[in-house]
Length: 209
Image (cartoon, rainbow, N blue to C red; front, side, top):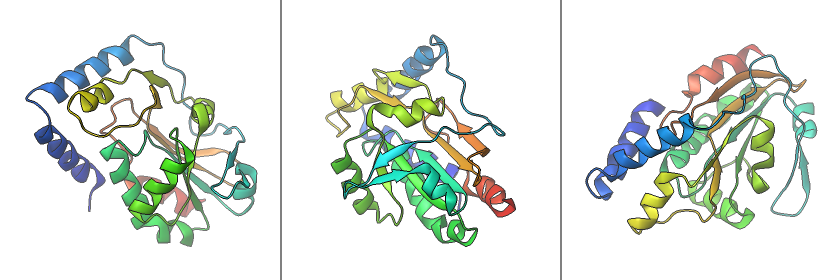
């Protein structure tokens, strides 16, 4: 079982749905966009993550400090329900959720999409951990995840009449493991949205906390 292998299959499937060469052109445009932007420094191992508060579907406040009081926290930032690579990553998180909980840790996924869309996406994937709205990507910015504007892939999906999210800005995908003190013990983020952290890499860290 390899996340990287499954993500390559997702890309091949997406490419087959699109007009010839259009995905490659979109990815080239994205690389140029990212190269021309001064990147925000992503939180690194050993740094303390900012505290944050989010609204749950029931309207309650979910605070990072409360989650960390119970143990380590794995935080995953996704682009949205429109992104098949994000869906694949979340499915892997769900597969590993029992092992995560055995370490005493919890999982939290964040998306910039509306709360209703997050809830629908979580239900469709059968997630047993929260997927909450990060309104205006405030938490993502706090972790140093640069915001991309006019993501070329989204424009391609729109042109090809494939469903996509309505927001213009999406965070760079990222995954972080925080220890109970809120210190980053694992950090992974790439502007290339095909690349995600293999579960065993962050599981090794969780087992040591």
